[in-house]
Length: 314
Image (cartoon, rainbow, N blue to C red; front, side, top):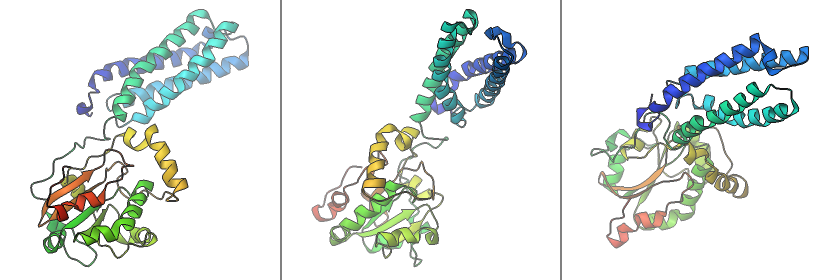
């Protein structure tokens, strides 16, 4: 379990809730009349409801030790709980459900929203898995990474400053925005003496078509499927909110539909955050780390220190 996310205190609550769900489900399967059902068909529905509740309780019990890994279980329950309340209250008022069972179900449902809501909020604000943000490595090991013609990133950065653009997975619409932005600013960037190099997490043959689409297939690129260079440069993995949060929807619609970038197959880690760095003689001079996957770095400012003789904070 990822203790760094502060989820340990909720594990006992989740286990107790799982036992409660299983008991309620079994009770409904054995004695559907606790709902004051009047017809045989309604009793059958109640028994099936009991099966569903007991099955969900079993899922919660399995997921409780590692809620981050099994977050869809809790999201499903969180989304279903309001419907349980909405369907139970009218049945309670109409007399189809006994008062004791009906109000008990409502109280349990409302109570379940609290731990699952807290759990999902913490999960959404935390990167998936146990990967922690890393500082820029003292030794970037740039000689490990090669462009298509075999030259290493260390060699390139010794010849001239390199604007290293580390991309999100190549199916991401915001990755495609980045390619379009760099293509549009390429002449100004290269006028400063910087050489552009892309880094992606796919295999080169697999991703060539996308660079051809934006007419930048002649720009050197590095395949880094293990995201080692991303980690060396201290780039974080995104949280669920950063990737799927409501604040991203508007930007995604703009990019996918209005700007025509579309989306594609996920190639790489969908939670890996991108970034852009100016590297010279094996050292990082300036750069930009994305706080949102929809951010647009100011590439001209990043390479501006080559003209102005200044360092940029990143």
